Length: 114
Image 1: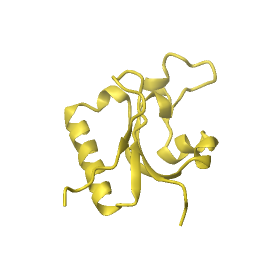
Image 2 (image 1 turned 30 degrees about the horizontal axis):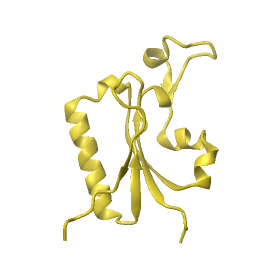
Image 3 (image 1 turned 90 degrees about the vertical axis):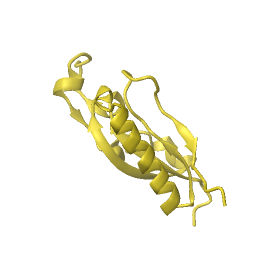
Image 4 (image 1 turned 135 degrees about the horizontal axis):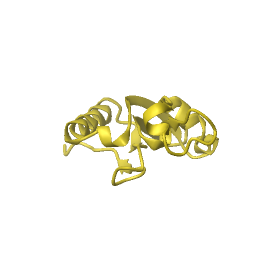
């Protein structure tokens, strides 16, 4: 068993997962580029392994503005389901795009009131 906290990283797409068509594509990448899987996003930040064990969770591979209220409700349900199924999860990171109100969120895992 790891002495590092287990963090679930829920991939939502957005800017953080976007790759442009070429190295200087700083404008059209959301529409014409590709999206990395959450495993690949995590893999680009090797330093994270020093502080946490990360469990990648695929959720969406879309532009951040494509996740509206129904998507946020599904995201919340996913977090609550994972917290119930995996009580060893210490928190959740939800990397997504810069066109939405947040960047990354680290939230404590919801726990039952019993």
